[in-house]
Length: 380
Ligand SMILES: Nc1ncnc2c1ncn2[C@@H]1O[C@H](COP(=O)(O)OP(=O)(O)O)[C@@H](O)[C@H]1O
Ligand SMILES: [Mg+2]
Image (cartoon, rainbow, N blue to C red):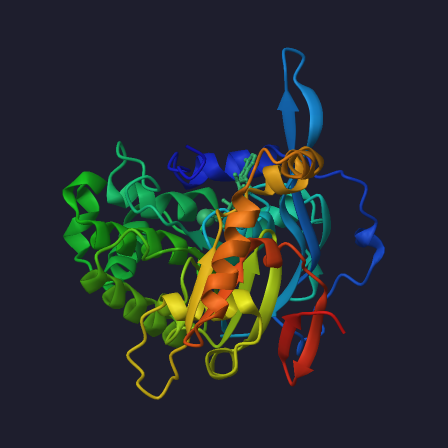
């Protein structure tokens, strides 16, 4: 499974280093230094397409537009939430930023420096500053490595520490993450899901990074454990001045954790705002639908019932088979759309419920700033 990058940090780094990034960008001749007061991370017009190959000859028949023109920033010690249903491209955004997978086009700047155009050597240095925590606390830790090796390896690869100093650092990292120093001699399977995620966090912290992509770090955990891990991440942010890109598939998890939130649908951001603004005044129908699905303990928030109708479209079927689909719908072979329309009409007769059809969401106009820092995809 592609989620499973558990070969250990060094193997991951080898894989990163092995990718060839010459895809014809001319960004390298632009200013390459930090201006000091800009955002920590700046993502601009980022696109990541995966080729779709079919048949015996593996002919290139099209692209999965997993990330299709995404722009946002993450400030110093800021947490930005990236929220959307499974398959909308959240992980691909995170991985492209860290150059785990190559971008198709666009720009990523970290402290003002062009990440996508960085040389191999420079990238290796920059990776110390940019780390990732994975969703799957089982799959992201190599089962054959001791915790000591898992956490120690990045520090060895980057020649940060060795010998007893290395063990001391591992012990401190474990303690910072709510574990015990003696846990370093054990293996991942000896720990619970929450503890494994703590170990994953300790590994991400090993090189003293500034920025961490947290890819659904609590989605696989019991609800009771989720808040412990979120509290840990908040404490570590405070102590080490970290910035997070926090990926989640629903708005409940990010509500108390993020400063700003970007809502993503089918490879694009459809709405982005400060947390309070987004919860108080959601404008995009998809954001409203996600909010209506998220349980909120806040009684002041007016509850609006919204139904999201239709299946989640995959970027392939939407982008590549659009014409075929249109033809089939026209020929009456697919009546899903008309079912939606029927339901829409039925629901319109009631006034306590608003219906958002997937079909309506396929129209994705560019983002417009509607109030200070509040962007929404809408026709002007
Ligand atoms: N390595 C890959 N090759 C081809 N398609 C991919 C690859 N990784 C992800 N995709 C596709 O890109 C889309 C976005 O995936 P992903 O970023 O994992 O979504 P999310 O994290 O929001 O669930 C999905 O349709 C997925 O199937
Ligand atoms: Mg994902």
